[in-house]
Each structure stands twice: as C-alpha cells, then as structure tokens.
Image 1 (cartoon, rainbow, N blue to C red):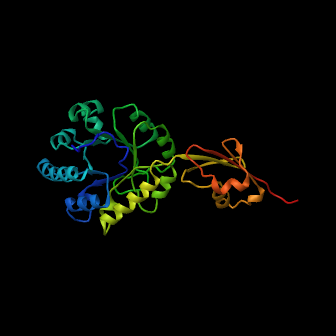
Image 2 (cartoon, rainbow, N blue to C red):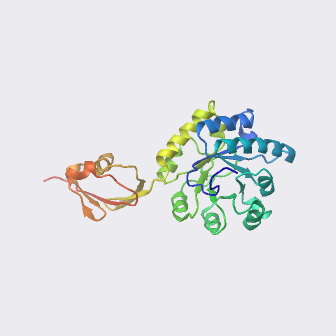
Image 3 (tube, rainbow, N blue to C red):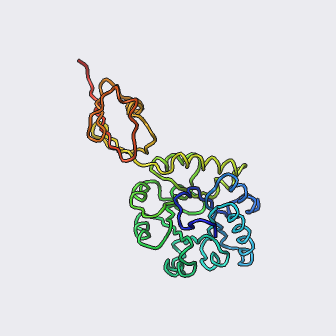
Length: 287
C-alpha cells in the first residue's frame, strides 16, 4: 500500500474508473499512465468479465504504477482480489452487498484499507452513512451508458450536508456539467468515458484536477434577496459583486451580512465566506 494514511481521502478529489468496456481500445496501463501524469488521485480497476488470471496480471501492474506515483488504487467488486493485489482498497456496489456485507468485506481487506460503497438514492445514502465505509459514491447523477437511469442533482446538496465521509459524485460527469456540481458544494467526482475517451488523457485529467482544486472545500453562503432564499459556494465574492451580478441598483439596496447592515462604501472590500448569511433588500420605485 502507499506510504500514507491510506484511509484518509481528504486530499483525493479526482477518481478515474478504468474499464476497457468504455475505452477506445488503448491499453489500460497506457491510459492509467497518462491520467497519473495529469494528476488523477484515485484509480479503480473495473473489469467485470475478464478471468481472474487477467485481473491479477493487470491489477499487479496498476498496483505497482499507483504505488510508485502515490495514487490510490481501488479494485472493484472483489475484496479478496483487492487483498491479494495489496491494493489500497475495494469498491462495492449495492449488488455486491448480496455477496459481501460491509463487515465481511472489512474483515477480508483489513482495517487499514479503503472500503468504498455505491449509493443510488438519498435513502440508500442515509443507510450507508451508518456503515464502516471510507467514502460513498452517489449517482448516477447524469445520464450515462453505464446505467439505464440517472437520479439528477436534486439530492446532492442534502447528501453533502449529511455526509460523515467523503462523497464522490459519479455518472455522466463531463466538462459541461462539472461546474453545476461544484455550485452544489461537491469536491470529488468520478469519471469513466470523459477521461478515457479523451484524445489527450493527461490534458483532460489536468483540466478536471484544476477545476476541482479551485472548487474543493468550498462552503455555502446563504443568500436571501427580497425574501427569496438561495445558496452559492463561497469563492471570495465581494458584496459589491454579489449585488451587481444580480442586476440590482446599488443605491436602492440594503445589505445585511450576518445580521449586521454593511455600509455601501464597504461592499467592495467585504468578501463572502463559508456559512455567511446575506440579506439583500432591494427597493423599487422613485422619489
């Protein structure tokens, strides 16, 4: 295993699921090398139909590559294989729990390895929060070829709010919708096709890594505009920018930050932070 606290995933935000099924025919080792060059944090070997001898050969190569690069290596479905390969951990889907309970899988892989678990609804996620898992995957968020359904973004904010372990959002994530997830407070995503099928895997991986780095760890700012509530990720937005981006006339707005009225001349120098509460009251009409 990697020379780090393996079960600590707080600095692991970009997760690539490697599978020939959704690749372009390039060898998985080559894709893995390019993704690692681009800064991927976690690699999962997901091969559901290959014989065990092939998985041992491929897994040994991936495990050695990840170990050398400081990347977390996860094996899909099979805790025995994860232990045999000395992988950093195993990922279980909901269907895998029919074969291995979380407690059984934990006994097989040991207390020092990672155990990840897929969840596909808010109810499943709530139950999974009570289990001995090191991270929870939630999805598929968007339509994807790997599943015949998607669950949308409606529960993402609640999932992130109640989570007691890192949450990895998965399913149809791409360059067009990543910012939507970041705006909900996400800090970690898993991808398959949008990295594996990229013409330049390293560059595409680096794009995701940079976007996640900018968004990782952002909190939420509660905003009320004339009684209508919304929230946004903190990102050092000033009160001046907040008013202007909502098309409000500064001279007709009163800003209350955390129950304190802020004079207009101070707006450009006051930045919003996580958990701030802002009330914007906009007056209409003339004198």
